[in-house]
Length: 311
Image (cartoon, rainbow, N blue to C red; front, side, top):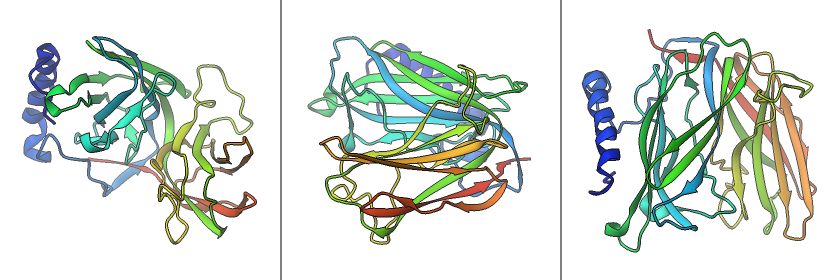
């Protein structure tokens, strides 16, 4: 992605990261812009992982004003796979419009669990769309290493702020000890999703099945899988009933619980909600009982796997 000729200090720091990566990894993994390989290596175990709960534009400066049409990428590179594991991605012709009331980026990843036994690098390349490409402005361009303690005995929240000339990008993250990878699928089994109903799909992971945890725990944080004004009009339901989630892969605490919840509502405030609770496994699949919503019946399936690592 071309970020133009402005913000030379930011560009220089990012270019240094790019040169370092190319010198270290290009002979093995090829292009700097390459996406991580989804096929698992041979070895796998429960690992310390990083969960992305949210990313928001907390502050803007340098003459920028909301609403903002934002495009670019957020990615993570870990010791398992130094190519990009995409967390957010929008091309210039499909920006996300952020407002002061809703400054959160719509996350679409990661595509596999992020391992943090060793430091991981969070890479941010975001721009604000102008009336012409020459008017586009850098919102944030940074690559910062995240170091976490591999010896923690519990799950904990992490907060990181990427501060640049025109913005502060604020991440809410979770460090999860001894976790497995969960891939979530939601399907309409009977009836159909009604036109005009908004939908929210999300998940919560907890180490305490009863939901009690200290304030620094991840137990109360939610992972947004999809928020949609109208699932039918926006083609988020396939002919076979599958819900096209924006995000479906997350880390779950071994020995804890994974809670997947669905909310449907109309503009008049009529809300229907239901949830499925799972006990994480090291392999295989789990399918929920039927979730009733009046106008349709849904089920949630979770595919479980240990987290693969290279020799």
